[in-house]
Image 1: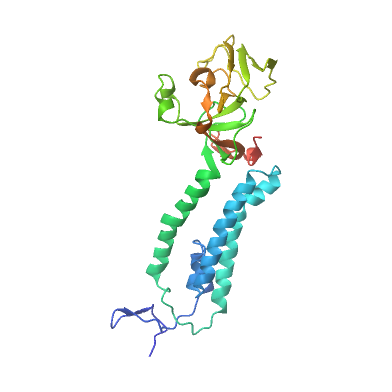
Image 2: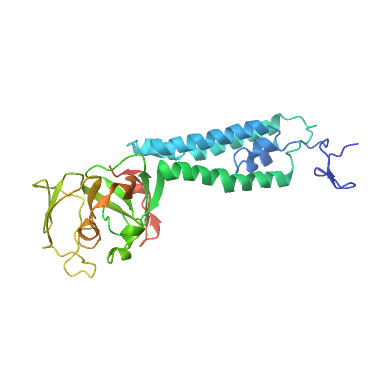
Length: 306
């Protein structure tokens, strides 16, 4: 005789009784979907859960890639919501699957609590990091800015989206990733391994700086994005009468400057940036945290940087 009141364990023999009858509870299937697909497994639809989880991962990353290229704030927010909507829909589907099961549902080999836990931990430790390595390492990633170097374009505590599929053009903000060789320099020991800087010159360009004016191939650049420190500020690093003789950007290199022009390290100090040191292009502000007020700057959410 099979039991319908206890779990899947046959306490008399301490073994699992796969013939035990246990009705599926829709609310429990929905809650288990905090790990997408686990609710379907609970409801007896293992392959359905695997397929839904796989599709969620694929469409979430595709949405993240598309997010880099759309300009409309509404479209950006919709793309950001794809994984959340997907998880909710998978949860509803799991509840419906459980509801459709007959009251005499017989437990299957994968309807064990320790298997649920094992599936959750396995996904957490393998699939998610693997996808982050493949997609986050080669296609799109987030970068948390912790300096004022790109003020006012990018603020301290802004989380920005980095497109790793493209090389920067003039005017783009690039993520620079210094290697061990670059870090060995006397001055550059104090800078971070990764930083954001605006590309001013590319291969073959001639750059010259006279005070607050930057000359690109003999013409003054209109830099509405630049901020200058007050002459009395303790943060002043470059004086307003700073001069740099004309230099030509070598092949496969970039000349970069900070938007906060008077108190940041850039190509005036550490020289040209090699193409191999470019980690991608900052395309959008994902969200912005106001450090002084302790609140979000919602008006900067999904703000384009290109």
